Figure 1 (cartoon, one colour):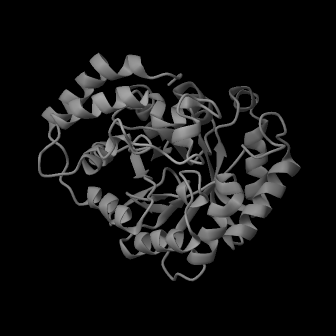
Figure 2: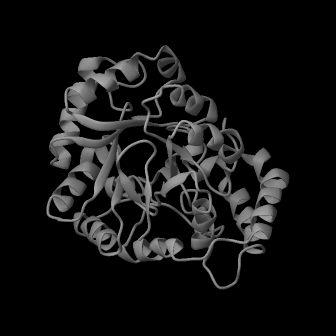
Length: 326
């Protein structure tokens, strides 16, 4: 697996990582044994970067990761998040609250220090005031975290974060449905040595090409209960695209995709073709999916003609269907 340096840090991350939202059961029920198999498949296929959050499955994702990764001798990095927990979001951000949350994450992850702590889509007003970044610096000084970054919803929020010179990374929604960051953000991020972590690379699975109009999701799956933004930002579910509209867009994307690769690998290869991206973090519901996702790292870069056609499709057919700020 190819490794890429994460911003100005000393972290080298596998260019395909593992997003661990699913391990918490937020994409439908998942047995602990199956979650462990997913992590083991990731390790066996060269994945060294694992992304989670304290609220995924109310800590379950962190706990499962900690249990399995404690046993590995591989040099793996775990990025977790702070800022969406009960009592914290939207206005409970204090130094002590952050310290307590980090301690709970350290306990679940079975680590003395968090490799990368990311602010978790916190309100823009909190980002703008800037005190939260002072809290993060204090956590570094106390030896609780190595580096800090931010997971954000919009480019405006990303720009607020990049203004802080010690920011290591930005986690953003970047995929074939959400192409705006490459024009509006990537140059600034590169100039400031901020690594890009691309989340929702398959738009909650829509860009896998495996869904159709009869596909249904479990009651506990956010693709069911948040399909129109009922629980949190609609941008986090199918990247803000209506499910049925997304199916039509995937058909159009299939016309550009080379026949010899899968839709999922096509979508992720497109992301990896952008040098500003350090790692792409697809989730997986099975060990087999992990192996399929890793293949994106072995595929040759897409042609310039493919990139041109994909951008034209985004501008003409996709951009105006996004139902949230970008």
